[in-house]
Amino acid sequence: MANQIKVLLKNDVPSLGAGGEVVKVRPGFARNFLLPRGLAVPASAGNLARVEDIKRQVASQAKAEIEAASAAAAQLSSASVTITRAVGEEGKMYGSVTTKDIEDAFVTTALEMVLIGRHPHMSLWQWESQDDERIAREALAAVELSDFAERRTDTLSGGEQRRVAIAALLAQQPGIFLLDEPTNHLDPHHQLGVLSLFRELALAGSTVITTLHDPTLAARFADRIILLFGDGRWSAGPVREVLTAQSLSALYNSPMIEIEKDGRRVFVNG
Image (cartoon, rainbow, N blue to C red; front, side):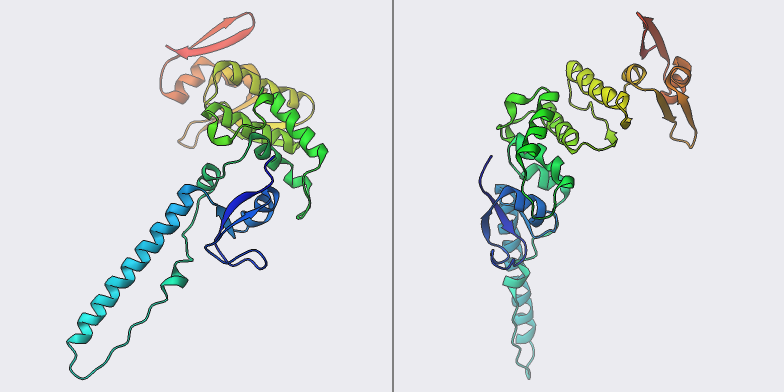
């Protein structure tokens, strides 16, 4: 794991640096303290470029306002005008950074990203233990990414990044899993692998609630299902009773056909 990473301070942080400075800190300190509190952002090329762009815009705006005020002052015959502007102070206001921007810019290793899932089990100043690392590596193994532990996250494909995110969730070890399209960006092999993992967790006593757009996967892995029709109507119950060609045809406003083979149901457009 990397010993230190660079971050860009958004505000003055005692004993660390002033707003606008790039400093080196431990990854855990950045994730647990600086980033969640909005005190810093990763010192990526994109964030540094944004800061320089904002400074240029502020300086340009200040120059334009000074020129406009000077022109107005020149038209006054009995007045003197002194204009000042604290460009430096405004330069500290780097604008907002969305969660997605932070995730895209925060380049780290796959293992470090999965270790984020262990943070709910740690106190504010606590470092990851050997046990935390063991759990994180087991989570990577569960999604078939053991050999990717030291890979930089910006070198991973979309499907690999998705599996790293799932591994972080597995490392958290919650009792209830809320999943939003967990199979997005995954090929069929890994779609089945990921849903099989959560099916096993459900059988072991965990609660798993997920949204899926593939009725065939829902029919294979779910116990109960809710269909939301978008106009206020809904249907809920055991998957065998609720998930039918008729209900899906109404849901998708398109004819659906059910095919059953070897005890498994497949739904296709008619």
